[in-house]
Image (cartoon, rainbow, N blue to C red):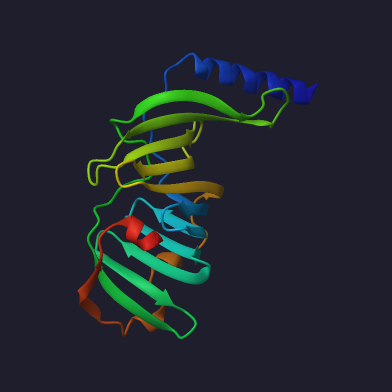
Length: 214
């Protein structure tokens, strides 16, 4: 009886939300999780753990990458406010400190994003079998790549993101999973002590978040 009641409530909420046109939303300010990365043209695949802090505009990425059958591990700390990025090499306790020139972009649906559809991943035939999501599309201001975004209706968490350019024949795919609200260890946003000796390399720079991914 209790399971049926919970299912009925979730079904009513879903039907009610389907009757209202969704609006662009912003993800919670503190999130951790994982994502699968695919770049088709470069034959690149990867699995990544990330920590996200919108309050202080910081992102920490730990990426296991397979590119042309060559596996690499990357540990990158992006400090947007400071305009600094750290490439961290824990196996020999060294760091590269470079300029980071990308303006902060929160995890969100852009205000000019175009709502495409609201669908259920899975099923609503029984409790806890489905996830209600919204699909959005648009064009980035710079570079002028097109995007498709799928975010949850409740909580505004990313599920999938596609960034593509038909003329250049490029496609970046990100699938998000195992996401939790909050950051377990805030120290993840501080460079490890062995990075204190790293000097800023004025001849090197990361120009975008996507540079850090690949």
